[in-house]
Amino acid sequence: MTSSSATHGRPETYIRFDGWLGKLENAFNMIAAASILVLMLLAVVQIIGRNGFNLPVPGFIDITEQAMAVFAFMGVAYCQRLGGHIRMELFLGKLSGRPLWIAECVGVILIWLVVAALIYGSWFHFNRSWTIGDSSIDIGLPTWPSKLVIPVALSVLLLRLTLQIYGYWRLVRDPQAEPIAVPVLADIETQARHEIEETFDGPADGSGDTDTDGSNAGSTKGPRR
Figure (tube, rainbow, N blue to C red):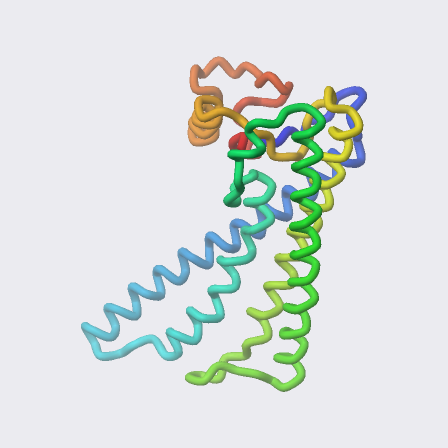
């Protein structure tokens, strides 16, 4: 779970940027989810059309291949914000205070470097596809839109990682500061409680109390990790 509510003494600019970036991540994630729904409906049409009327959807495989980039990459920044990516917590779970924040910060910096390299490589492939006019084999669908999605989505992820690097760095400087806009480790019971609250859009007991970090327990920011 991440906290992004602003009160006296908190970094206002940092919090505002987190809110703006969160809206962009939510939009990208909705597009990814919508693409999955559209592909499912298209698959239904494909099956019914092929088996019932011998009329398959033209270029169904081509469309599916191009759409994979949308639902595979446009939700990565959203997932990173929630701390939902696979991570090794066996070692981190034994740390606390400044050592924990240092380990988290170093890990995010390493991810930042990898993502930056991936952005460069994916942009190169998009540019090549755009230059040569690359298209799919079956219906000649241009491939550059799907290849453009990758560097764009990874750029949003890079912004989120940059924000988290700053968030962890301020905790390294002051371990007693409130974690803002960074995933925080939690035990299984706390994580399950936050997932229930997120599902029902409010506290599990319906009291509407705020969480221990001062933010609403039903925050859409997601579970603690």
